[in-house]
Length: 275
Image (cartoon, rainbow, N blue to C red; front, side, top):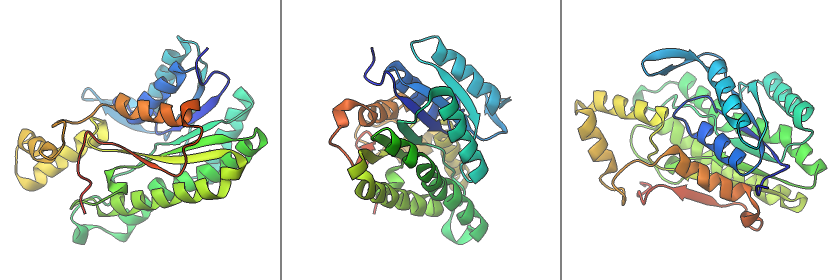
């Protein structure tokens, strides 16, 4: 029996094949949790070819089901209240409970030279990176109260802790996410609901690789030069892997973290967080 046997987790933004969400879903399933993997519709490029996110979610469900856990997939735009309510209802229908929410879905909208960013980009970043986790938390907290507690784990960033040039909207919203986590930890601790933020550094995800390409194009440096420059101050001198973040989430979701709430847990390889 895994440490999360009998628990149910919702993981948002789980479709990317090289994404943190997918790694988290697999890791929580390894500990015995039943999993709802959720993401928006649309396509994502995989090995140079477009793939439907819905198909990728279904493949993830199949992979999870090969182990000890059950899984379902859900269409979920975290900025849409109807989608959120449908996802929660689908989860309750399938598994009767919600114990863990991992707010992983994110957007790099508005990540550019500050003066070139637009209000629409900042609005998109706000809605995906901050409003979405807030709405998801509002939807699941009553379900957690019914069963005597739960865990909410928000996926932040080094951008939650400091700043570097070129990521203005993202950094602002990820700072706000830390405030949301602390608010939930303070307000619902008496209900047995713990809330923490995991703050990845440079992790070799699809989103991170896209940022490397953007920075390379903007600077005129080669991709390898860009990576060397970005990782120069990382103690471990390289990007981490999605599973490194997933291990941190599994710790906060499990019984070893029963007295841990309101923290920011960096998973950075020793990178300075900037200003």
